[in-house]
Image 1: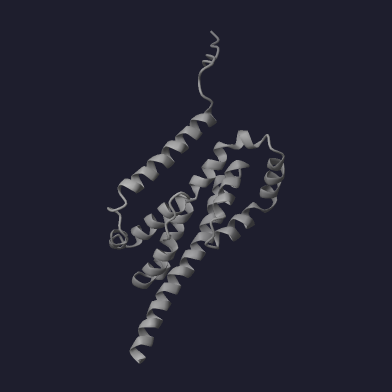
Image 2: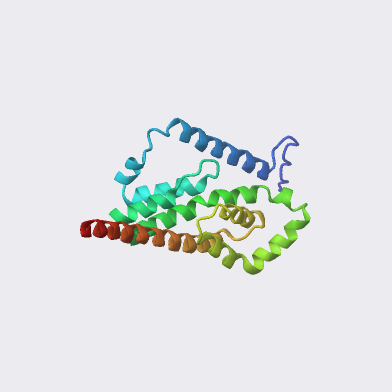
Length: 195
C-alpha cells in the first residue's frame, strides 16, 4: 500500500520564518537577561572562572552587537594573570563560537536577499575568497566582522569552513592580546621598580 505525503496546512510557517522568530527570541532573551543580570556578572566573577571566564566573556562579547562587551581588553588583562597561550586559545574558541549568531542571522534572511542583485556577486565573491576574507577580518578588532559573518550565512557558505577561518583569526588576535597583556604588565612592573 502506497502512502502519500500529508500536505502541510496552508497556515504552517516556513522553516526560515520559524528560524527568524527563533533568532529574534534568542537575541531578545539574551538582551533582557544581560540587562536584568548585569550586576550579577562582574569582571571579578569572570576572573574567578579563569580560562572558562575568558571563554565565556569572549563568547558573550562576540555573540551580541547590541550590547558591546570589551572582551579583548579582558583577554589582555587575563593574559597577565593566566598563561597567555591558554587565555588566547580560550578567547579564540569563545569568540569564534559567538560569531555563529551573525552567521545564523545571515542564513535566516537568505530567501529575502536572493531577490537582490548584490546577492549573486556576494555569493560568487565568498565562493572565491571566503576563507581569506573571513580569516583576515577576524584578525582585527573591528565591528565589521559581524557583516562578514552575516554574509557567510547569507550565501550559504559552509559553516565548518566559516568556523575554521574564524577560529584561526580570532585565536591569533586573542593570543596576541593575551601576550601583550602578559608582557605589558610585567614591563610596567619592572619599570616601576627601577624608579
